[in-house]
Amino acid sequence: MDSTTYNDVMENTNLEPATQLQGKRILLGISGGIAAYKTVDLARKLTQAGAQVRCVLTEGATHFVSATALQAVTGVAVRHSLWDEAAEAAMSHIELARWADTLLIAPATADVMARLALGMANDLLTTLALATQAKLCLAPAMNGMMWRHPVTQANLAVLQQRGAKILMPESGSLACGDTDTGRMPEPVSIVDWLAQLDIPSLWQGKKLLITAGPTVEDIDPVRFIANRSSGKMGYALAQAARDMGAEVCLISGPTQLKPPAGIKVVQVRSAQQMFEAVQCHFNGIDLMLAAAAVADYRVEQVAEQKLKKQGEQALTLTLVQNPDIVAWAASQPNRGRVIAFAAETENLLAHAQSKLQRKGVDAVLANSVAEGAGFDQPQNQLTLVTHQGVHEFPLADKSLLAQQVLTYFASTECSI
Ligand code: PMT
Image 1 (cartoon, rainbow, N blue to C red):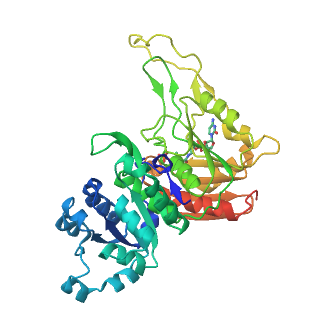
Image 2: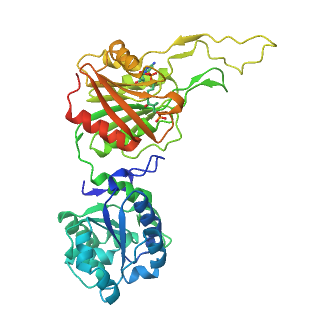
Image 3: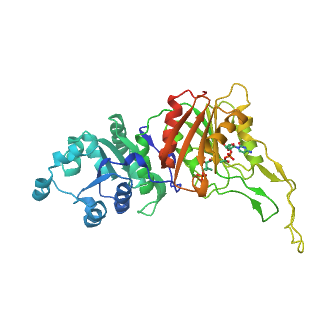
């Protein structure tokens, strides 16, 4: 993917920071636009994601952001001149160019894009850009007229042709007072964009259907039966699938998570609604991952009015079974692979194997949810149970686990 609009970028969904940046050596070039004020937060978020970050400012950038603040969050001296003898003695600009595996320029002004396109080396940043073999990633930000100017667009095209990765500016209110295209995306979006650039497109051209979150079964207008699923596992799978090139439909019960960008999200409440949504979107999919915690039962008759206390009497609710969504999916002819989850508090393997048979699915991803683990946690641990055997995915952040699971399914037949 050479260029991305802001809407294509993974948004903050309360998932863990991108793990792909762990150990990356990122040279953060900051050029002189107002968006430079966001780069202290950007440098901090990159560092938190495990990257080593060194900052280089253009002369213009020094008017918008403090080198001291950047040094404080990265722990490394910030550079802005080719002619700084002490800095050159510590690490020459050529060593710095060799050190980096990614040169991220954010914000990239019209001026810096023009100089990069021409191959100029008239300051430290552009000299580094010529001297490095690092991947060049740009987050352009400028006034809307400047952005649309044919010269800027021509420079953009040149840079893209040379392989630069571009995170397109977003629309919104700009520092000049206009509402226009030209704003630099928020640091969290830049971090996630950088992280997903390195994920292989193992699911390119494939269609995935993922269920996530709890279902909510109403009792009366104010009360309901639900469970502790936060949706994190299913959303992480959906985002990883999208980042690996898949066309993703995410059917989600109620959660606190933001709907991820670039994914079709169908919001539902009850198991019956989730069933109908799955039936609607099942055709033609290559893989279904049923991570939702679907209620097995619903109240037979939802009360139209709020139930009143019946003196000292116990209240009896009659529960009827919900349709088994994943079993329905597995029973369809000429279908793609269908993978269920199993949340177990005991006898993980035995229960997962029984679900594998009973539901007729191709595999079960079992997680122990004893003492709340699995539900609403940032991490999870999964045991893949198939007709052939068992494969362990050790405890990891749900984002990383999602990538591992999808990489596994991409490389393994697993109809198993
Ligand atoms: O959402 P998080 O907080 O991140 O937590 C993740 C998780 C623990 C919810 C997730 O990893 C998980 O285990 N999801 C499945 C939970 C569950 O309902 O398991 P189950 O053993 O009750 O159901 C087995 C499978 O049948 C599941 O794939 C479920 O989606 C499916 N099912 C269940 C009932 C039903 N009526 N229809 C179904 O399709």
